[in-house]
Length: 264
Image (cartoon, rainbow, N blue to C red; front, side):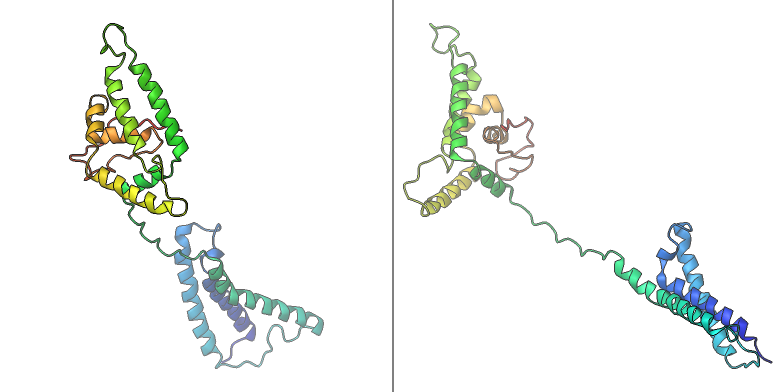
């Protein structure tokens, strides 16, 4: 009993194709069949390739007196056939590894974001404002206070146009004038940084201890609780205090209920 070599040849080519498809992977079928079928088809390609290879190995024990289908090809035709076979085999052999190389590599999980101290962020935002800018805001508040303090009855020294605002504006001016960048520093650069460092520490200690009494009393009627007073006052120089940022700093700090007035 012998096996016709042409069947062995065709069967071997088919087996090589199955092996190549299994090696290339999902990209071979992308756009050709539904995505959910691709894993199943690839598995069956690998199974058939394995079974076929076993059959080919076993079939090699049978011989045949017949020549193979390409044995009688003329020399001019044999060379192109061999080249095509080599190219196809190379594509299937390296297709899988090439596909794996072009697949996007999974990125390592991002490191957890470090927690930012809300108070430190507020202090950094305050320090970022130039002394010229803060001084301009103070002048604007002073002009607003002059308007609020206008007497509606010249004979009554307490008949302010807006007594509630007039009580708050001077307190806000005093607080803004206490910011580190507003106060003059005698030490020249770069030694002035030592003084600035200490003034920032003083500001942190002041905030942690609660707002100054003059600011709480002066602005309580206009801006309600300490959190809103602090947020609105810093909002005048463009520093935003988010809801909950001051929790644990001021007694019974509640979420901010009034929108902070933030200048562009």
